[in-house]
Length: 401
Ligand SMILES: *Cc1c(COP(=O)(O)O)cnc(C)c1O
Image 1 (cartoon, rainbow, N blue to C red):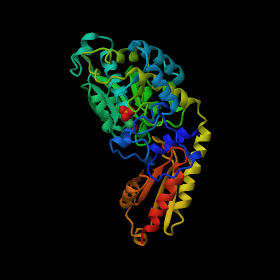
Image 2 (cartoon, helix red, strand yellow; image 1 turned 180 degrees about the vertical axis):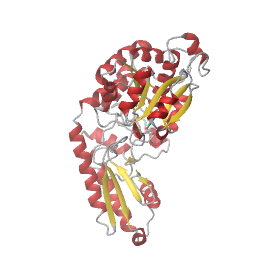
Image 3 (spheres, rainbow, N blue to C red; image 1 turned 120 degrees about the vertical axis):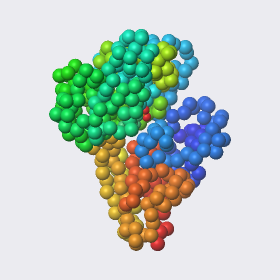
Image 4 (cartoon, rainbow, N blue to C red; image 1 turned 90 degrees about the vertical axis):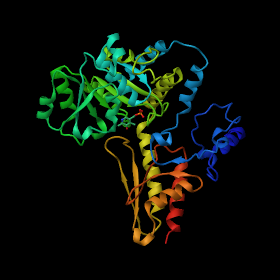
């Protein structure tokens, strides 16, 4: 590392991070401007090591330098918003084996716009009418166990949610007013109906089927799996594990529906989606993130995550009374997750207090806590940070009792 770069790194690294040159994090910032102004410092903001995961409140993920390069490059020219959406959409569709795609302001906005497209088609009167459903269908069917807060993205357009549990209930619920069937991949294991059954029901009744896979890469195959399975619309976050712009996402699927969805999106005004603007930088940044993601060695990345988690586990267990477990959530944030638990009587330490001590320590570290202990992931860490996480956890565990 050049001296200039090292200084730049040290100026943004949390106090006392003590990382070596080889532990230099991946920073997505423009080279020349980095030294000029340090807003984090200037504004007195707390930056931290993110061992919690891709949480919106924690600004979720860091963009790769390739993404920032794309953003910077495109920021220097005017282009037509629709033209960049057309071209980027084609490339994304090709990568994800979809008929068509468009960049949205996050997975949430993908759901609003996709829903709008289903309801309105390309009818200007209907597009202008939303969220009043004059002459439109008005119901979306979801499995009871999938009926999470995320359906609010759909109800924004004026539709009502109809809950069902069994296949029979689904058949009975489908009628004249049914606009769409919605599936939440994160809860796929909680419902009675499988992906395939959901898609088949949609096909049988000629009703579009949408799936929310917001946090469902890795595995990389999920980028095309649901398009190939026959979902008419697939919605994914751009700023979670894909590490694109935090306020970007992708809506992909049937060509006619993507076209209709875009009728409610900027640059068109007088629409329900006018506030869901994605700028050219985010559009191209989203593509750059996707290209970066599919080109990565995912097996190697997985091995590296496992090694890091195992290191933290081994260090934490140096404290007597501490036990750990590595779990991999099957759906959503499918990444090695370390749970650290301890005999609370013996250590006289509450999980929430350990979480707070790590947050207030130097460097500041974010983890999750529950009644039994703390849990953490390493997929959002910058290079080398896992060692600091391990060290700090052991220090705090050793302080107790
Ligand atoms: C994060 C998330 C969303 C919202 O995604 P954004 O990209 O933040 O708009 C929607 N659904 C699920 C299941 C999510 O996890």
